[in-house]
Image (tube, rainbow, N blue to C red; front, top):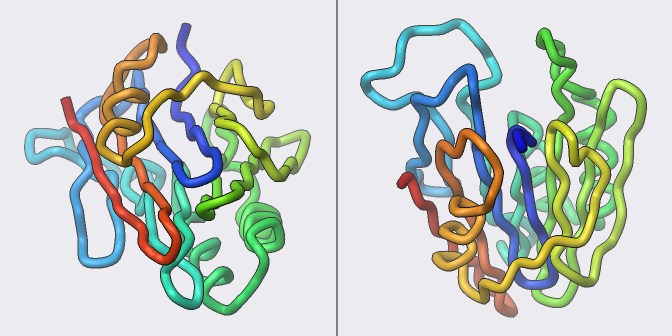
Length: 193
């Protein structure tokens, strides 16, 4: 089944996977303050604004939260958290402001905010904005699974979570990233296959 890009979040752990039929030549790289999805050196040139973005960022007043998501909305969510917004409000504000992607598929924006003892997941589609608090690993994807649903994530570290979602049984895997939140620290990891 092709579900496109997806996030899985639960207390203490969040993960994101790029799955793509159209732009498979991408990878995750680590930057000073984020994990970033971008084209590989051999990728064909494109002017598509939706293929390069920060997908994981530490956030909050003391960088004790993690944001995961499928696009440019990750940065404003993190910025709202840095200003002291509660996770639910940061997700709602950014997702509402940026809305779904205006591409040929009306691709939903999906995101999650992870704390060490709780998590929030959200999506904005052409027909809805949905944000909720979750207490178990929960998935939302851009296609087919665009309503949050429980997901059997067994990983307990960022490294393991990135690998686990990379290996998930959905089609057209490209790369994956994850964040582990433990008290006041955020550890990130990525897997490019």
